[in-house]
Structure formats: C-alpha cells, structure tokens
Length: 413
Image (cartoon, rainbow, N blue to C red; front, side, top):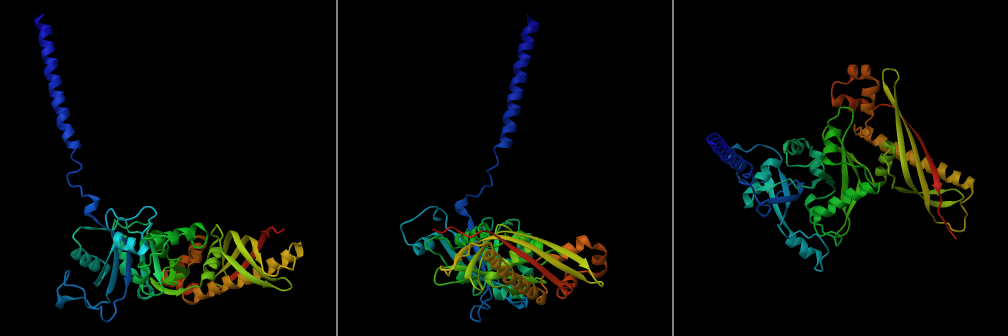
C-alpha cells in the first residue's frame, strides 16, 4: 500500500515538472512580436522617379552622409518618391475626382543626392517613419539618366533585399517626375497605373515580359544586352509605350519606334502576338494584318573565322480590316498577294531594327549567347569580355527568312 502511494506521488511530481517545463518552453514561442512594427508606422514607397537636377535644383542636397568639403565630385540624382498614406490607398471605385483621391492617397517627396543611397538617406531625414522599399513596384528613369548609365543605380538596387525582382523599370522620354504625377480616371494611383500599363501590355502581346530581375539577368550576360520599355506622355493624363530603350555597356545606346516592338518580338519568337501592321497591296488596297502567333529560330555558323546568323521567323495572323470595301479579298490568290506583301514589309522592318542595334553595339536578340553555346571554341578564342562581343556583333552578317500565314480574313455579310 505504501509502495503504491509512493508511486502515485512520484508521478504527480513528474507531471508537475513536465507541465512547468512545457509552460517555460511556450514562453519562447510567443515572443515573436516583441520587435514588430505596425504597417501604419512604415513609410511604404510605391514608386520612384529618377531625374537629373536642373541648375536651380543642383546642390540642394543636405550634408547628411558627408561633409561639404568632402563632397564627391559626381553628377547628382533628383529623386521623386511616392509614399503611400496608410489607410487611404483606394481599393475600389470612388465618386470623388481622381486628382483629389491621388492627393489624399500618396505623399510626394523630392530629394537630391550624389547617389541613390545618398538620396534615400536624405529622404529618411524628411519623413518620420522608417522607409521601406518592399512595396516598390515601378521605377521611372529619365532618358538623360539612362544615357549616363545605370551601373550605380543597379548596384544599389541589386544589393537591397527589399527591392523585388518583379519591379518594373521604365525609361521616360522627358522628366521622370512628370510621368509619376499622371493619374488618369482609370487608376487614381500613378504608380499602379504605370504598373498596369506595363503588365497589360505583356498580356496583350504588346511588349515582352521585362521585369527588373529579367533586365539584370540579361544585361549580365556577355552575349546579350538588356532593354527596357521606353515611354512618353500623351496629352494630360496618358502614357504611351513608345518603343524599346536598348543598352550597350550599361548605357542607353538607342531606342525603337512603336512598330519596332513588334519586330523585336517577332525576331525573338515571343508569343502571344498582338501587333497590327497596315500594308498597301497592289490591286487590293490597304489591309490591316494582325499577328496572332510568333515563332523564331536563330541559326548561327562560323564563316572565315567570323560568326553569321540567320533568323527563321514564322508568323500566323489574320486580316482585321480592308479599307477598299468594293474589292473582294476572299480568293486564295488575293490572300497570297497579301501574305507576300506583308512578308516583304515585315522583313524590312526587322532587318532595319537589327541594323540599328548593330550600329549601336547592342545585341538584344541574344545571338552572342547562341554562339557561346554552339561554337565554344570560337567564343573562348575571340571573346574575353562583354565589350568584345558587342564589337563583333556590330559587324556580323545577318539574314532574315520571314513567312506569314493568314489563317482568318474576317466575316462579312
């Protein structure tokens, strides 16, 4: 009897010990919020515009990261930041005017700095809450900044863990700050409008997918150069994707017109199609042909110790408009005439784009990467840096074999 009582007491003491041990262990698991920071106490930066300061704005940066006598002799940046106002970013339709909603939803702050890091440090001095780039979605840089080079900007952004690789970087024809101030009725937050502009252009086949991470990955390759969307302001509250801004040696080397985007996507074989081209066919008149599907194959070879390339481009499309209604275009012979005319026109547009990129030493098609993989001995002997391939690319012969097949010519009663 005494033994059973002793065992019962022992189990009670052990149970109390285990319960106390479990309670102590729980205290280690419920301390995860001791250093939490509420979202209302964060300065969330949605968009950045990066410009060159005007003569009046130059030298306006504060002495925060350096002393005046120790100021680096470098060109400055003028940063316009859009900071979200907590609880005021609209998620649905509103009856109030878009300009009023924009003013209440975002806070625009302008700062100057020797570098992007310096400018953002100056920005932190002007706002009470700690800045965060985790919700940064769009960066707009002016053409002047792009032609200065992006090495300093990319260095800071790539090392900042808060910057998402799915952020969009756009090149503006004019001042980047002007683009960031546009708020059309369709979207009351300028940054979200620019984000939708870029992503919907991709979904409609109007522009290739080109997040900031993709741009960095492409431009880091020796055999390929990066490119970014080139935009401009149209009217008071509208932005247009005007072309592609392509780079060489980290500097903006040139730009295309809008139809050049379709030519680039055709040469790369990027589906889905979305671009339309109007062509005048003898005996038929003006016809609008829209590309539906694209495919491309690049063939490379080495001739006389020099690479050469050939683009085999295959397109499928449909006739979306015929301006001369009195002429019937349903016969196979007329469809063939339209196809042949389109092929000649499109081939000339693609070839012109390639010649322009060769002139500016910018291989945005990735021919160099194909040469590196298929002809490794030539690559190892001739290419020792990215600049080596850019110089070689500017002088290689390139052929175009382009063929369009019209699968649909529309319905008409």
